[in-house]
Image (cartoon, rainbow, N blue to C red; front, side, top):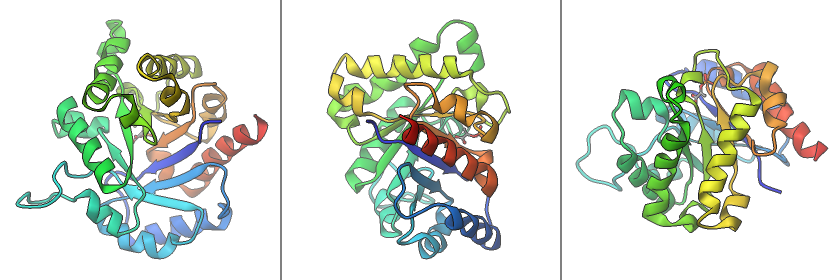
Length: 256
Ligand code: PEP
């Protein structure tokens, strides 16, 4: 069975006091021996606090972005090695907000994926189409282009032990969610695309769904055969919501 994960993306949110309250609420519920990886991706300045609170627990943590460079004169950047020094195991790469607001191209996202792997992090590589692209019937073309950027650089083995997140841009932070069928169809397409190069890597690859996942829709999304968990923005800031999403993923693992 493929591994499952529920990943919180805090984005540009948090405070020392608020983080502690949120994480302590999660720690009360999430056991150390956890069948679904539970991860929080936090703003870099909070990594030390998060490590202090979560070390030895069933919750892992990581960054939301990393530099494509290892070190040097790159003001404002944070390297993969720095994330690892604070105990991070994961890093989000190519989130649509990085692509659209900060102009990250497929080539830059691919370099960041390489940098994450070189630092020993598990990259959570985000792909997804805009509303206009979906309406023009270009979803597969866009997903294919984004996945191919990685495949061309690495071949399928480079994706092994990574994670892909399908995040339709029109569903992120909008309250609109892809239907379970739309999500599963896109995930199956991504898996086929990678499977054409290496069926074993594709069969093992966790593909998370992201885009307005909440307690009320998590079970339906996670029930789909190609959906291996979620990348969760807004709802990851509310302990009860995030816990309910994580429980929905656990229920799928226990039921299958
Ligand atoms: C995200 O930040 O990746 C995301 C999916 O956000 P939201 O859950 O708020 O739509």
